[in-house]
Length: 353
Image (cartoon, rainbow, N blue to C red; front, side):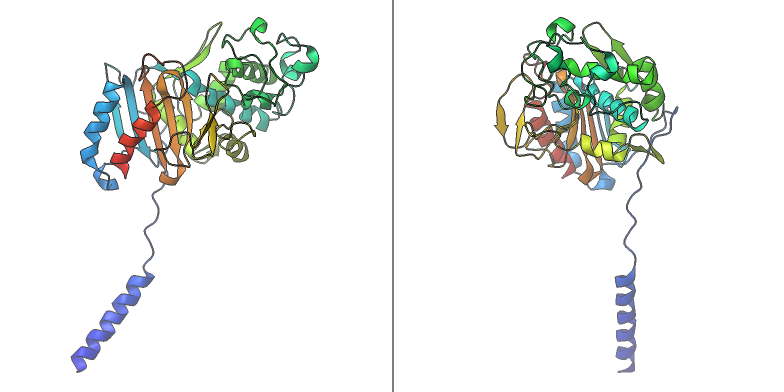
């Protein structure tokens, strides 16, 4: 009897101790050091993921003309794959995924007091930058460029004065357009320096990216290694914070990844937003009911460029996914969105769920 009493007391104490044991601390965010090839990793097994689904994912990526692919959790590399002679040191174009870099730079310039996004574009680069009547041109603010609601003609992506003609008053029509490049001119004028110089000092070098802007006459496209794209993805996952440095004001970044206007709920400030009630896509005015990428998590926001350049950010899973390469479907290379996204997420889900 005495033995049973002692055993009961011990079990009770053990149970109480178990109940009061602290929960394991959440894993800290990892920021790869600048100027170093060192990067922490995590294994598929340590995450409890399905290792049997990894090879089908890799096979699919290779079939779909992928050059590089990464999955990161809390900033640590879980998968890093290269195909067709591409390496971690190879550079590749971001295409329109680089719009998010320009959106970030606009926010940085605003927090430094150099510009205001609600001011008209002509305050910074002068009047006559379009071919529309001055009264209509002066309706166009920096925010209209950030949200694709400038009202300018979208029949061509060649951003020349002659092509920037009137279609609708600013703010009344959503249309995917390369006129965003005018924000680069705004930032350059506001900062009184070359855009690339300002970009390198305020963003690229601070988070350890490599890369360069190819400032062509028609297109201005960023090129970098896959790991540099991943660094920007980590910054985006952390709402503009890099380690202890708030690179871009969090409030501005939060605006960027939320619906920015009433016309296309799936669009922020150059970020595509999943989980919304409807979406408009590049190249048309059709409104499609339902979420952008049904197979992807609802809280995902993404930088998307032609030929399926991708940065997917999923806060609920502390996840960043990167894809670079040529078009998954060579017959449809130009649009920022394609059926590839949904099919890819089906493969990713098989691994991570």
